[in-house]
Image 1 (cartoon, rainbow, N blue to C red):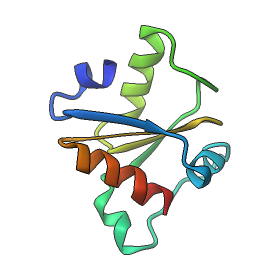
Image 2: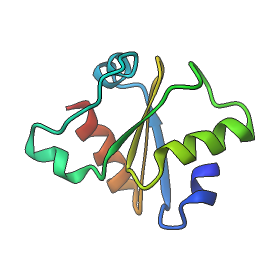
Image 3: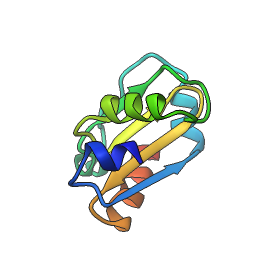
Image 4: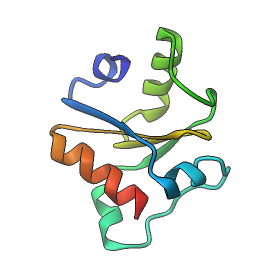
Amino acid sequence: SEIFRARPDVHVVAHSHPINAAIFSACDADIKGVCHESVMLSGVAYYRKAKGLIRTVEQGRDLASVLGGNSTVLMKNHGVTTCGQSIAAAALAAIFVER
């Protein structure tokens, strides 16, 4: 809900636990796009404060702040949250970050 408050351009927020992205979320390295699908991502951010569920408004605000203008945020040792103007955009961001 805090992503929606922070980003009026976002109409869909999705969360998943794709295996490669979840494993990569445990690393401190930055993701660099190396395939043509990566141009579809408007950036990948890292949320390293929580190591599990977002349970408080403050954590939600932190997550939204870290996401910034990006389409995707990796959540430390957890998974990935994506967003977009449509279900397709959020789903494709999740698929592309996993690839």
